[in-house]
Image (cartoon, rainbow, N blue to C red; front, side):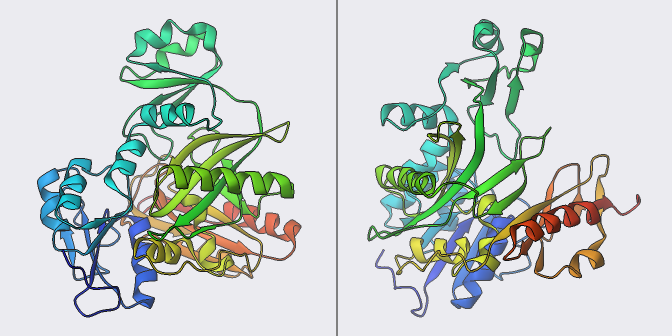
Length: 386
């Protein structure tokens, strides 16, 4: 396909997945006046009302992906669970698939991802590949450890921390991996961008704080409170991975910072990521604008931080399912430097990501106070409950 360049008449960008990441990508695309088509299996997905080119369809069915993607000049993703077979077919037709199908395939299977780290000398936690629960139960001497599903885990699903032999029954009875539970000082994330011309940029490292029970980010602080040498090493490691996989797009690399200052890669995602949402308000370019620039092979923008920030995930309250209601919104909107992002999801359920709040402040102490003020004030409940 002889594709017109971005900004030329008739150019179309396609996005597989219409969730909150796609929604924020569309919001960034509006500033570039881009024509964007989106496909998602949910007819009421967050993107559905934001583009006239929304299509209800399966993103895991190869034929559906091909039919959708062949109408686009560049195709990207906002979720990894898509048909890699369909992406490969589109590449054969001349559609620019970014990130490439081979990168998507690598990320889709955590087993292959961990093997990639081992094969390429990327520091990561010691691990063993497992086929079923019985194999995990035979590895009691590895405990404490983390058992992860090879495929289809996301937002804390597909992850079980197993500390004692009595907890081995929690292991998944599907192909996965068992990795040593690492004693780390901090968990950080670095997001890097790489365009097709090979230009790269890295966002400042952010510090992640996880929900104690559900293995997903509760809030983050940017920049991470780490040493300059640790920041440089984290950037170098993320950029090394991006170069080795020949990324085109955005790559989020979650890492453990150990007590001796060394780093271990936990996981990576070749798309915009929860650990980059604060960049909308706090950086010279957001991760969403940067992703557009990268997949369209445009010059990458500055990723420098304008102001320290934090991002608090708005999660559905435990015990609440049904039409969403937001309690405490006026209090949060009264916080100086607070920006509320709701994802357009009509229904809440326990621990579902319903939105996020970014807060900014030059004083880190006040920033931390604002984090806890948001967490204390704003709750997502169901319509019928308080």
